[in-house]
Length: 441
Image 1 (cartoon, one colour):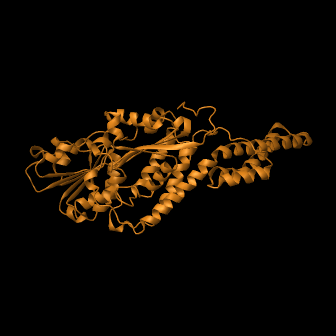
Image 2 (cartoon, rainbow, N blue to C red):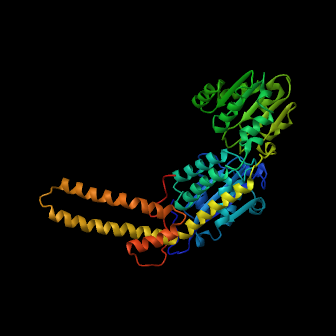
Image 3 (spheres, rainbow, N blue to C red):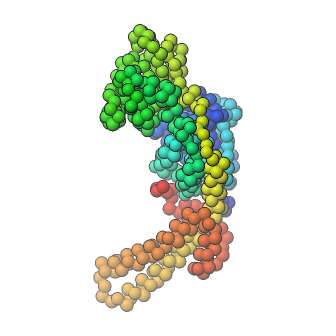
């Protein structure tokens, strides 16, 4: 990435999100926009928006692109992102715009806090979204598009999820797509005496296996592209495993199929389940497609005796909230904390830089004085003294610099730092990440 913030631009950094959600966009459109691992989604989004920071959250129910930059850099960014997603989907931008949403600033921050808490999920109180958000952040970090602004937003959203999710009472309904899928069978008991095939070996597949483990199935088979990973997952749940190349034979014997792969195109076709392949009818067969993009060709539903459920067909029973208002208020409080932190950045960043420069000047001056009085020290001994001085300064500076950089009341701390260290007031400087994109959560 070679994108950089415009220079000069004293405006505060802001956040923008453009997304598609199951409530607004049909599966047929979402799957054409969806990203799978290895797509370099954050890099593509950053380039399309023309800003250095980007993060893409792509799940079975949503595709959301978050970008951050100065206000001037974000002018027109929403239109650029919509055009990028429309091109990816192969549709006109106006058609995609009709199913998309755009939020900026405080609204965008609050949205991600609600997402992390499971408040914006099809199933209220959904729990899988936390792991999905963490993975999205990890991918953006690897692609060097997770700068300080978005990293702070993700950390705030995850904290909001922990606190705002607590008031939700999910016991009355499923809290993950896997739970919803197993309930659609319905229930683990419905697999009794039947042959169940699970395609995939990721988090969703593992949860499906856990939920049906005690269901009394005649046989449970895990089929995955990586035979080693599929075998390991099957062993943990007392299931069998088969090679990916043998899935046609395995599917021909299946009564219930859970397709949970991250494949970019269908891995189960009509040919896999056609009567002449699968043998004579032996009762209703259920195929549950948990992939976006879809793992199963839609026309499988036209086969006699086959019922096909996709993620949108499953999303009909939201969980119950014991106190959704309390959860909403908590998410809003965390979003407000993030906004206060963001608003303080124009003064915080230069204050941290001045604190560092001031401490380094004092260190260098005192080192010169001390070394001049310590005659006869060799190069090795002088290096030890210099390292000691540097380590002391770094350790003393670390707590105040972290507090200035991360605390929601950083504006007040900045004023205190100016008084404590005798800094004269100065105009806000351009916001940049001096150390580059962060590498830690």
